[in-house]
Image (cartoon, rainbow, N blue to C red; front, side, top):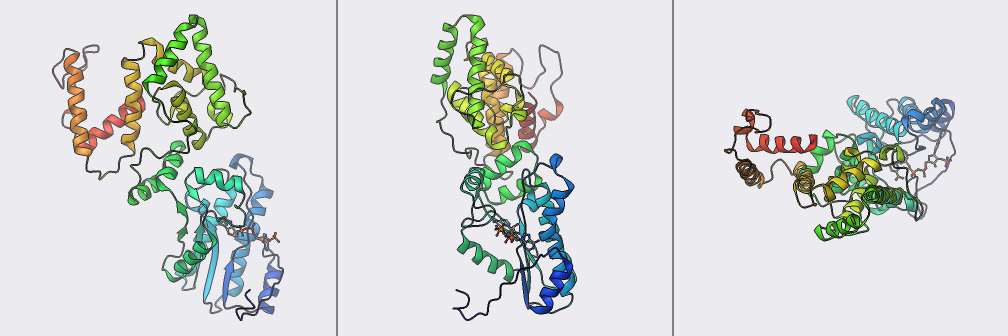
Length: 402
Ligand SMILES: NC(=O)c1ccc[n+]([C@@H]2O[C@H](COP(=O)([O-])OP(=O)(O)OC[C@H]3O[C@@H](n4cnc5c(N)ncnc54)[C@H](OP(=O)(O)O)[C@@H]3O)[C@@H](O)[C@H]2O)c1
């Protein structure tokens, strides 16, 4: 194809991690531009990474880039392009060595630019077509996390834009920010994504969640489950809920039909990640009718602990009282946390919440804004004078810590 377009093409094999080989290649084929794409990707958690694997991951990508940079020296080049990855920009699970290798390329591009040499390190998101990410299963998983594979034609267009731009290390990726940042931040704090997502105007999409196989159910489901549970002898109710949780956890982990996980092993230890955590929450909510926060599997970290929580909400107060409302409040606080800082409804929301809090105080026999009758505590000074943002932050914190 290239020859038909008038280019002269030479394919020359070379181990890019070997200095003598790269020097010989450049001597035999003097170049005006470099596009460095060599690399290997291995998925290994950091605590199991061996020195040999780290060296293997660095060899082509890092050593190759450094050798090209060094051996080409001051030779005038039209372009010096490095193929990097989003793993090096915001991190990806199990990509420790690969992420570091790509971050090295981005740093090299900055260093070359600072020295007045051309360089662009493009941090790519996953590509469709062919390549190291183009496995159907991998791409499906990434899509459910909010990363859509780049189509080759669009990726090549973006590459030309990147080369024409000023940024030495641009990111080219197709990201559903609402979904991606929500899942990413579930298991780790990410100031970077917090800044990016509101800029796209999508951070407030509290409904963005991975594909849920079952529609969320409401009070009817909870009533139905409550009826079934109360029809059981009291000692059997807890185990029935533990079974429901164990089976649901086994499903989202991809175990076969009818499988159950151990009731006292932690969800994280069982292999939950941010995606499974959200899917699990959605399925439990669909099956119990109980609104749970996205962090349910962290707040109640084993099947036994979560089942005990569900039992409290469903049975302790007939299901319609304070416990169920608290669960609703958790969910509300979660949506609140995703509200963009400049959302026009913040003031109205804070007013509404103040009025609800006052009404609660009044029905507890207290004047609005006074202390807690159970403890005799004085009212919170900062609460009385809180700004809208303070007020919303206080409420988010309150529910997060409850
Ligand atoms: N595919 C994606 O979705 C994606 C996303 C982000 C970034 N990237 C980056 O884009 C680049 C190309 O990715 P790809 O998907 O095309 O990868 P790929 O299909 O796995 O190709 C990588 C190439 O690197 C070559 N290579 C490995 N070690 C080498 C060495 N020591 N010397 C010379 N060549 C060596 C391999 O040659 P052999 O076949 O001979 O081993 C292979 O042809 C990589 O740097 C990757 O990190 C890709």
